[in-house]
Image 1 (cartoon, rainbow, N blue to C red):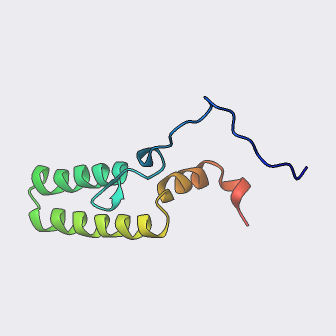
Image 2: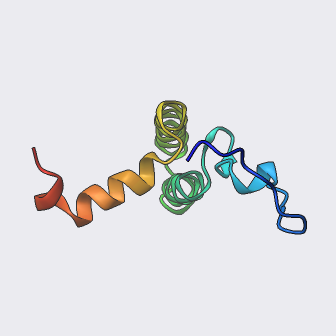
Length: 90
């Protein structure tokens, strides 16, 4: 049980950093940043409400960056919470 671990040659795999880090755009999760930018562009360009569109983008992106600093996978956890609401209720 306390035997030293031996490494078998040929069974080593390099673990690249890009496979373990979350994909962020400007500090926010990629999907959230794209959705937020699309919504803000629709308000700013489509409805021609420039100031509310910019404000929506700034507030949404700031909240997404804050959420990513707390937990980079907060959107996946939130989606799972919505999917399994009765199971995760305390």
